[in-house]
Image (cartoon, rainbow, N blue to C red; front, side, top):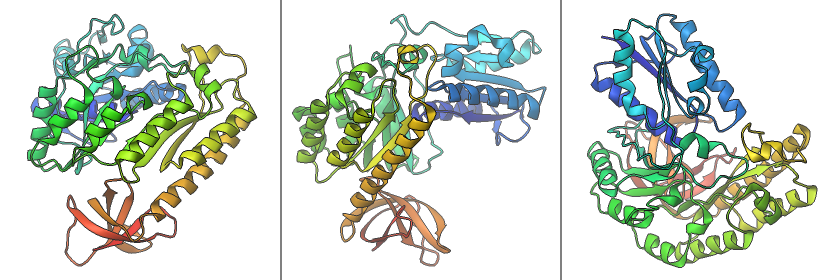
Length: 439
């Protein structure tokens, strides 16, 4: 029996596709082993969101040949979609699978072994011509064990000036509601209680079709066994009165909304080619806070974007405090070859980017602590995921509906894994990372 190992780089959509490819290999009779073990086939699902991601993708491809020079190495995903079709020899991969071709994995592996390891096999299509359909992939299990990430959308039409992903993922395309419902129903039967609905540009789900994201959520809401629905990253423009009203009517929706921001300054947003203003973003947050009781609002921010002045950065920092986000994901701008921003004047030095990142992370950490502290004394519904040690004591840890990481002391043989339990927040751990709760 042949052995296969898989490694994922990048986003949750990539992670979903890696899980789906693993299931394809299992159904074909492969035994799945750790990526550090000797295997007959190595599959690397690459990322290309930054130059660093490109480099890591190349490193992982080369690493496989060092572990087993005779193995079949498969490079799939965004990096090879952007570059791999032109440089198979440099990559050292035996099979190159572009995006929208990952369902071909097993067939291409058989083709490779039948050819006795001849020339590299390249399975690649132009996904930027607007005629490519959604590639249906399916999972029955997820390595997260308690939460399952479900991909429902691919591609992006936004062309932000810093981003290569529209070129790597192609134009927007959506998965039929019936297909999503079938997969989520299967996940529920396998014991999953929470699903996270994801896409490359989730807010565009259903564009050009006769269905919308809210209609998808209303369909998933009806699936027995699923107790929570969490949303992946959204664009702020999607948050209208109608959207918030219909979403808030769903009892399984988690009050946790990741609204992509990138900058708190309008002039920077224009240079980024983002499609909203700070006024529009603020309105979206206000709408959510009217329809939900203190929802968790999280976001991404890029600091040090080309031309960002000290004043523009200060405006962003002040805006973060004004909105009082629950969590920030702060990124220093990284020049990405092939994007408009890479050639913009006013490139910021690494020293300034590092300083601004550290400053904004400090502000974000304080916002996070304040939001968690507000839940001391409140009742929370927590889905526990695993048992771990905190300060030398055993706890079960998991997430509330608001995505607050909670911990409860382990009691004897009691196992809280994959259980949703109502508990009261008591205090934060010393490092502030967990809200300790009691039943």
